[in-house]
Length: 634
Image (cartoon, rainbow, N blue to C red; front, side, top):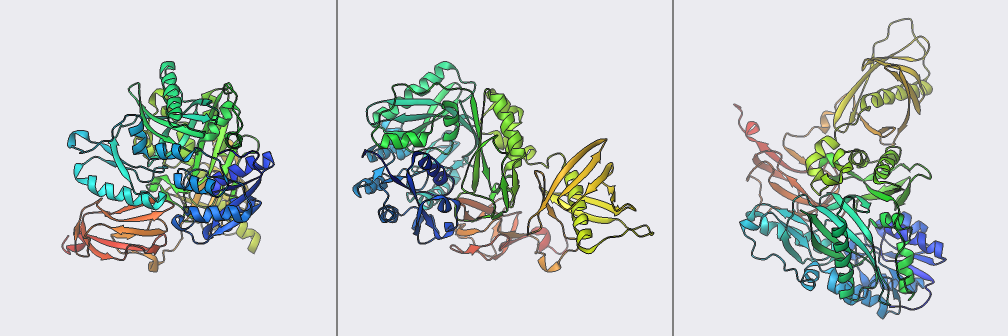
């Protein structure tokens, strides 16, 4: 387990966490080695490493989940230690053993501790918690959960007993794909509780730190979106209980290194969920509050150094938001494309990311772009500071969840700890994804910037004939905004719709508007694919003329994202009667399964998808003809 000073570390991971570990290694004077799949050949973590080793292929099962290839890469590159990051093989005891058997230092807990805790079923048994078996109607709702891994993969809520068997199969298939382990179990599902966790850090000399609580209740699809430390509003007695139970769990398995014990808090009681035997995605909020570098401490512990008897004293409050390339208004569908520009306010926030401006966002891995973290003296100040920083972050490219994050951080249910809960997005998603104020003025700025660009390219002159209005229409979050304007004698523009807007000046990159006596500047940028970004607003121009070749038959089911068809509903065939909302097929994209359902009740008249098919966004998967379409008299 311990082997003295470490000189070179291979990170058996990718993206943001690999870059995060490399940053600490550079600070410590440790050289770095990356591994990469073919899909990641040009990724930021590869560019930042001192050396990199290719893992042939793109799918996780043939690359980042191949313990033999990762160990061979470490030996080939001359690394003397392996840091697993999180996800992939980070909680795989066989991988930890393979690392140490190869003569390398494992920057993680002993394999025995991983075996005891990495399987959620075995962890519950160790702590005397029996899994739920022989589920009845009285037990509903229940949660089907993968025994290995995390991040929301392999999890399903079951509210009807008839759905249980199908959801068990689906969760098992997803878990096997993500973690190489298809074991799943069932536990009671607590509606709208708070997800609270405790960071632990232990050395090989018997010292165990509990580094405060974190609240991770704001989740979608069982995956965390916003996290904070400390968890607000918990009674002191409950916090003491969480610390005691977490330290006891670590000591029970002889834990060494960084880990997290997770609980669901409801009605004043803490229900044990699992122990993650690795670093968590949300570890930066603990680092900010305690003034520590958890990766540096992991390395020190792996080298055999003892921890001080007591952890540092916490200060202030920290909040982290996960930026995802996804569309919350479209069932959280992941998005792909080029991240043309990505810039955060300098010096105001911490950004942990695996992407830089110009990087492509592919289909093979999790859609998280970055974590944005702030620290402030109080919780209210931290929430305000993070919302402000995200609002001013420049994100040009695919749709992201940035606007959702800003609206969430400013929501009264988030401001009040008594109203926090895992059901937040189920309650408020529609309001949080509505077009934000200012979209119509952003559309005006986009139209006038385009007009200025055309005038610059082709020249422009005012004619002594009243010109017809120019019209441009932009779509923002599914809402259409029409802009009408005409040139003026002085070379400017008169805005005729929407009313009450005066164009002060316009260039291709900046437009100044006056609305109700208030003058504001709008920065305008256009992506190569035509999408326009005006401040935080993302506008998609609508073509002035519809291409009939692009029309689709009513009832067509189009792929909402690029991905792989993993399965078709059992016995589904053309000619079958289907009901609205009935699952027809499942796509796998960015490590998650996405259900494609019938848009209406009717007859399945075409099925173009088959298991294993790779599809692009917009590909025709199936056609459901409704009764109205089938009945010519309707």
